[in-house]
Image (tube, rainbow, N blue to C red):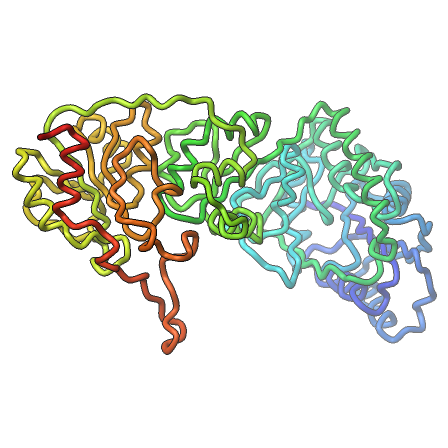
Amino acid sequence: MTVDITCVISTKDRHFSTLPLAINGICQQTCKPKYLIIFDDSFRDLRGEFVYQHLFSLLDFYKIDWRYEPGSNCGQVANHIRSLSLAKTEFIYRLDDDEVPEPDVLEKLIKHIDDKVGAVGGLVIQTNDIKPKPFLASNKIEDIYLGKNEQWYLHENQQPKQVDHLYSSFIYRKSIAEYCNELSVVGHREETILTYGIKLKNYSVILDPSAKTWHFRNPVGGIRSNNEIENYSKDERTFSKKISSWGIKPIEHSYVVLDNGLGDHYVFKHNLDSYFEKYKDKKHIFFVCFPEVFEDIQNIQLASIANAYDLLGDLSKYNLYSFMKNNAWDKTLHEAIQKLYDLPQSSKCKNIIKGKGKTVIISPYSFNPAHAKSYPYWKALIKRLKSLDLHLVQIGRSSEEKLSDIDEYCFDLPFKEIEKRISECLTWISVDNFLQHLVNCMSSIIPGCIIWGVSDPNKFGYSYNKNIFKGVKFLREDQFGPWMFEIKDRPGILRNLERNNNAFEDASIVYNEFKKFLNIQ
């Protein structure tokens, strides 16, 4: 399809930095515009300048009818409004004075033009910040305050798609275009208002991710010549009124970042009612390490920790254990999550019931027998438990060691299956691991026994369980620090905090406490 195009560039104070690159980018298009209009808010005679002698000659050679106009010195919006009357073609191609389109950009964009298309754009990627598209990036108008425009990133899927609005550089239909004349000299939100207005007139707005324009984001000149915060604030207020007049309610997001252990995920899950009450009008994004913990929750969107870094950058304010350490936390982990996320106290009452049958589920945390959480006396304890005519079931991951004399090994069970097994058992025994926190999230809680060593049960445990704890003198000094440390004489080599056998009650004491817990004589 042959379409005549007028290219429009609004510029200021970039004569010898990025403007020549933009003009040359126009000259190198495989499908060239018929006209080029340059509005210069810092107008000067460039005909005698070396680089422009060559650029203007190139424009003539390629038969691009160009004009170099003094700008109104009122900013880019005023210049683009003027272009509507000066352009001789129905379609206008916007290009900023610090952008360089790849040679096939116009060719690709023009292919999408038909009677129903109002605007077509490609990617506009900052040249020194080239990244793949985050999963949350969106050009839906409801997501405008997410601040992740799809055009800023490389797309794995190159298929064109319809969007609500476009950014910076695109072609559009002149006869239906309406610029907002209430914006300041910086023209913040200018393109969003223009292109969403086109969509409101029942024309398609299309994004083609295969067409790439490189944005040099020149820190000098252009809209950054007049960088007062008040201009952006004024434009944001104007945009807010526009959004309201369109009947759009932008989506507000709430974020949960759980870059920590499985048990911590369940501690947060126990607080979900309070979380949803606090942030009931927002879209919930959970960045997690164990998505299966929340797969039964309907009104959240799950994402990875890598996604969190892409979207949020610095995650330090979501670091639960740093929060507890920095605040010398002396309450429970559950209460720390409430404080970190500013949650109301849960009104949910625990339904604690007595287990039935003869099955005892054991979760030993046996990935590494030398780890500080690994109980050293399982063999002797299990020998005593077997005397009680119990059916012993070991759960865990397939990479864990099997304890001897166990009746049944059930490794790699889905979490829902673990909950089902717990609901049908007499009781359970674990060390300080995820299991107690999983059980605390169940609708009916069957108490169990936890063997503690160097962690504080008053911070990480639950009072309804039997917490078998030798004493505070064995607690590790930093209750909120990592379980691994760097070996001083081998930089870069990490080692688990090593087990101290003296920190644990021996098998006979645990066995006697277990019998008391079950009222066995």
